[in-house]
Amino acid sequence: MSVSPVIITTWRFGLAASVRGLELLKSGSSALDAIEAAANVTELDPEVNSVGLGGLPNADGIVELDAAIMDGLTHAAGSVAGVTDIATPISIARKVMDLTPHTMLVGQNARAFALRNGFHTEELLTEKSRKAWQEWQKERSASDVSHFTSGPPILTPDNHDTIGLCALDTHGNLAAGCTTSGMAWKVPGRVGDSPIIGSGLYVDNAVGAAAGTGHGDEMMKAVVSYRVVQNMERGMTPEEACIETLRYMMAKRNPELHGNYGAALIAVRKDGLVGAAATKSGFAGPDRLWQWAVGKDDCTLHEGVYVTPTEIIPSLLT
Ligand code: GLY
Image (tube, rainbow, N blue to C red; front, side, top):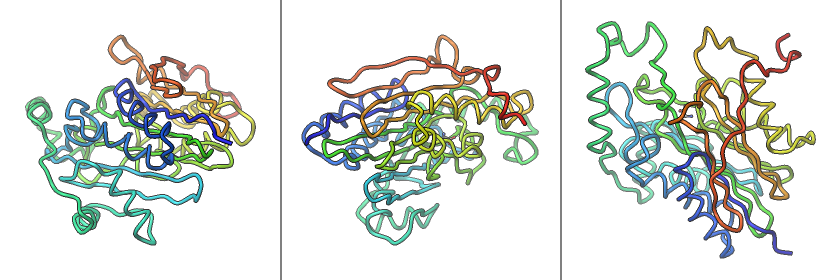
């Protein structure tokens, strides 16, 4: 029996990716292929400043990309971190999954692996992202020149977006993906949540899939995507599962000490039910409305639901 396909993605810019993914799913593609192709749309869009080509660089002005992909049917996964000069890291992650006995490759060796497998290099800085980096450099105080080793990086709500994706195909199989240039102006070598299986993404065909976007240094400590899928396994809806996970994440850390928690999660259950939630502290504001794209019959943008630190579950504070 054929299942109605679904693809969900983070952010308004995920809409174009969802359109591509849904088109493929409707024509019978696997969830895994749809996730990769959909993610490539965003990776290759120079206007998206947090993913692939045009992504904002690290403190040295180098674009370092992280990505991962996971197959719900086989539980296989591939991941890369700190990749330079190649715009489509999710496709390198797919090759890691398909061609090696390993799960994660990093840095120069991930790049070399990609080149051996047919990828080509290109300049990932655009005129716009280079200019943004130059502006940031000008604003940087003298004390920052140590690459933040004496303090936290400058965190603003708009410097750590990511595209997270989850899909259900017509065969009833699930897959998830995540791809990012990470936090803008990061300490060179910093890796966020996106390529970490269980944090940036997680999928289990028996339950559902989840993926995230936001402040990866906080999100990875709560292993958020794994928790969302576990919550669904315990009977929560996708939306409830995302809300509980964000509450857990916020309860474990002091927002006053650790800044905002710009974080959002999306999830799809194996029966196609979808849900999402975001933290209000990091993603609120007229210019930073949390939106996610849902591709079912057609592709539409959705807003909210927000979770605030005051809504944390008291039992999680003990
Ligand atoms: N979620 C993207 C990052 O923090 O790297």
